Image 1 (cartoon, rainbow, N blue to C red):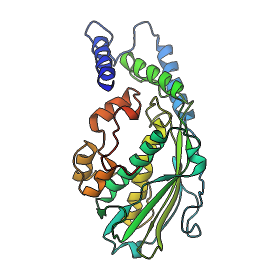
Image 2: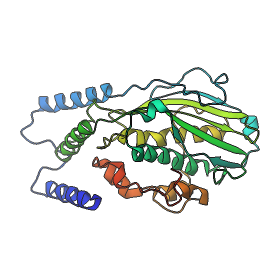
Image 3: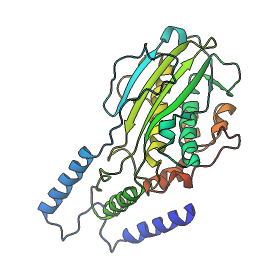
Length: 307
């Protein structure tokens, strides 16, 4: 199904970019300068307005909430706690499979969809933490154990995601600025997670929430299309905190490590433990996301399924 979808898409793209057609970097001659200005202004307005709001939500699953700081952040909202001194000597980490709180699970009826989001979150955690820690199988002796729970999820409107994909991709063929994703039907995700040591003492924790927005999140025709992508965003922020041993501030502008790039392309992870969460979809997944294909088309259940 995916191959047929991509083949048809690329064929259409090729036809529309033939020399005798209008190039994507020029406006059709029928558009006046005023029309161009209106179009760009509309695009910017849609982008500014298009953001799903997801409140921070405590799920009652953390060992303690008393150490968490005040809420911070704009795109991603979070409350965090990190004990950098205690984390410094830690060398090994195990990841328990992410669970869904009952209230979040009830919003996504498909067990496979919930499992896919959980697995994407755990895989991103495992790959990112591999930059600093040795990753071991769940249940194996480890200096730290990471536990994550999805506390809330805002389903993506499949209908509006489809419409947005058609509008965005279609205008991108003939206009210099593609229309941003329509600011309706956007999804979101809320997660809480902690890292505990061998004695069960909390050494780091985060309560996190983020909604999809019109500029940064491709519309995907799936009820968990946005949650799937946002799961990796959470994992990146939580991993960054554990690796640095301090609260992350600002954008992460550092280049990804070689092992992370290799894993992103679907290659063998640094540690065998990460294979429990399967391999990244890589370039096929990126192309599918650009054209709105559901993540289910490129995501495969790992052989050693944690769910």
